[in-house]
Image (spheres, helix red, strand yellow):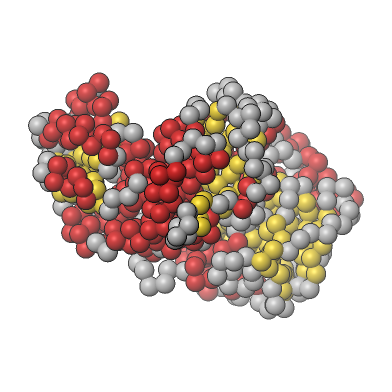
Length: 617
Ligand code: M6R
């Protein structure tokens, strides 16, 4: 969704802002803009509908915007259509103030009405413009910019991360946050604000995460952070481990393919620090992060796995696995539904929130609801220092590195493996898993990254196979148990990047209605890697085949013949412990979706209407 970059330094701001916006493109946007304060105190703004290239061209065609302090924004429209006027930055009526904003101002209509009565003229349809016009109103009244900022914060309701420029203070920018991410970066040529660390990696890896209700005043050589009461705060600086190459394509046609190929390394980095090598002695899963909470499960009688999109599909796999391992009810819940569905929260419920970005608003709201109602929250998050990570009681980080493609791949596999490891770890502590099975899982965890590497050696097979299928306009995914959960993910991958209609069904459920849609030529992707139900899946494949479906199957080496003989095409994955099988099984589905989208000429890394991190409800 929307992205913010801001710079106050000793060098021209525009190139830095454009570079930052380029690195934020992956979040999804429909317009972009920059505002720069000239040294003599004049705000210059340029903003355009469309890709960043349009803004670049527009800037190149006019007198350069000069100045060393500026703000930039990529907008994902919520209030008002995507056009030049609704793009950010928004400027106050006098032209003295400019604002970029991520989030939504819930009471903007009421504020707009009262400003309209006072004669303020609005240019755009956005909620953001009320911020800048209101700021000007208070600034005119008090002649004190910081007082005016606090007046605005007292008045507006909703979520916001903001960057503010004022022509009376051309050497500074002001940053504000509430319920939307914003961080400050400390660089050699100046200081930065950004909504996402990837925008800063080329300049600095030293950052401070802003908390809700904090206000920062940023100049070339100084950053002051103040609390809601106006007092100065001493804030910790963090070093980001990611390097800039991790957020670049590195020779791949798309970030998505690069990230698919990075999975062996991402899995290794996530698994190996948490497993003790099983050599002569027995192996062990260790979570140092949970050292202080050895009794995490004490008094816990149910677990909720709460997430959105692909992360929810991880939760579905977790439901099957954790319920079996721990012997207590485990529910996978869509975060957007969670707080409205009367979950049985309280001290006896453990809530596990799963999120790549750590900023998904629905997941964040579910977390807060769980905490408010007395449940412990553990989160599985990829982005260090993100809001969900900071508000959880415990955090387990997936070490997938930055994920840029909108369609998640390496975050999904690392979330899955981490959740499964957690289940096995807890089962061991509760004495609910036999040593034999436990040792086998630990051994298999060690080899998992190599097995993913084996699947990825076969890129040509996928490329060739998919060429036959990219023209279908509807695809069904079927599977049982954890393969059903995997089908949900495969289907979502296909939908989001190729725009092909697709649905996922529990294979045994087809006969209760959906089988009526199967006709000669219908494409069915049949997932048959879950060993206990492979024979039943074979029957389901026969069922759809006998109605004319074309079947692409996914199975393991062990059942290749049984399943392969029934399918037009079969993707074979190495065998591992049943519990871990989905970590391998998802890879062919990612490649299948990728090559179909490629054949259809889709914008794979930035699919239409989608955003990487969804920070609205
Ligand atoms: O950052 P999160 O993991 O919280 O994001 C959740 C979903 O928005 C995300 O998984 C989405 O479904 C992906 N784009 C799917 O590829």
